[in-house]
Image 1 (cartoon, helix red, strand yellow):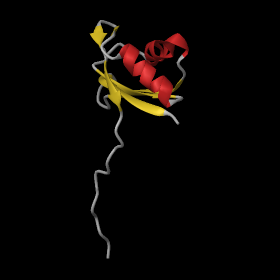
Image 2 (cartoon, rainbow, N blue to C red):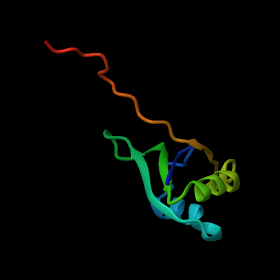
Image 3 (spheres, one colour):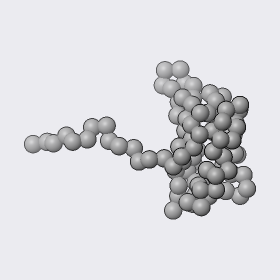
Image 4 (cartoon, rainbow, N blue to C red):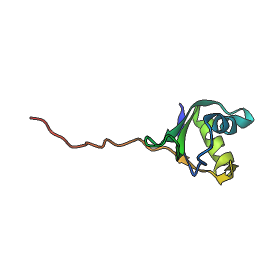
Length: 93
């Protein structure tokens, strides 16, 4: 089973490649990396998501990288929560 991680406190210049490289160290396998970008100016909003191939890789990555520094910023990581619907509770009829 895969594990999706929320990664915060990213520098605006951090790239997907740099984040992927950091999370792949020590043989860990990354499925996807997503940086959240501002619609208005196209710059990173300072957070993103990394999906690891397995729970074991996800746990190892969090242990190794939470608080580590990339591009001058200390990463803040946690397991990503399911996104809740913005429109919940609408009843038709």
